Amino acid sequence: MSGWHRAIAFALTGSDLDLGEQEAPDLDVLVEQLDRNGWDADALGDHARAAAAAGPWPHPVPDALRAGLGAAQLYAAIGGARERYGLEVLTVLPPSRRTRLDADERRLLADVPPHFGRT
Image 1 (cartoon, rainbow, N blue to C red):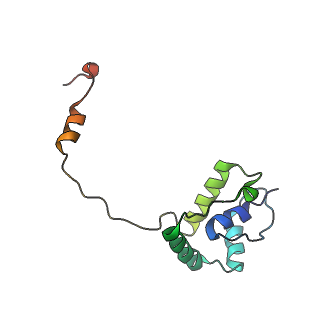
Image 2: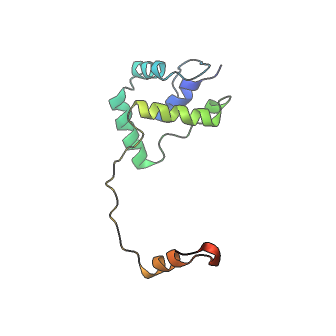
Image 3: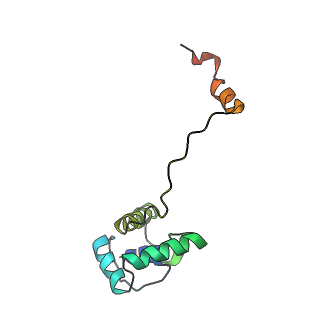
């Protein structure tokens, strides 16, 4: 058993919460646990935006909390939790505007190997 929820909660909140041991992450249970500890969707959203403005968010999970957890599985679980709270993207930006290619960009696009073949 490992502290899946403890590690995920740390990534989201930056706080080491005692959330017990789990064989696998259960996002429904995690949401309830975080809510009981004062981390509802609004609190997490406010914290995420403030933390992202000052440094990395989700918070890097310390080695002690990651022990016994697969890196890919933990990354996926954190992503699932972010999605559950609507925090997968903190700032929505408009699409970038189309720009004209300058001379160097046109040259690079035209530079192809001899065997490329043009039709």
